[in-house]
Length: 117
Image (cartoon, rainbow, N blue to C red; front, side, top):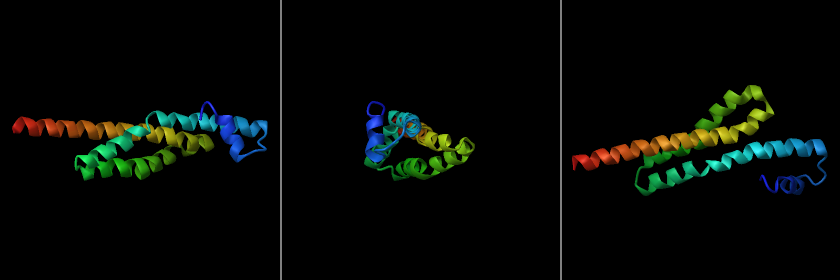
């Protein structure tokens, strides 16, 4: 997105003028920040399913796909279109924090079970 953003915009809007291109590139830069942490909730969800922790996987999944984005849209509503573009990286960051919390709780639970055994 950062390296080929103009090309991506031109694929979808071949006759983009300079003002549109500037706005689109700003949006793509903001949006592309989400790729830094977007993988963590997916990986956490898959790991939780693999270790048969469906509740934890569901918490991450529903949080990432529904709850967090809706709350972020509501919080960023006053920013208008910029708030809409900020929704993805902010939601991804919050979902990554949620995923880390789920992993910490899971690790603590496993450690306690091992100590009792």
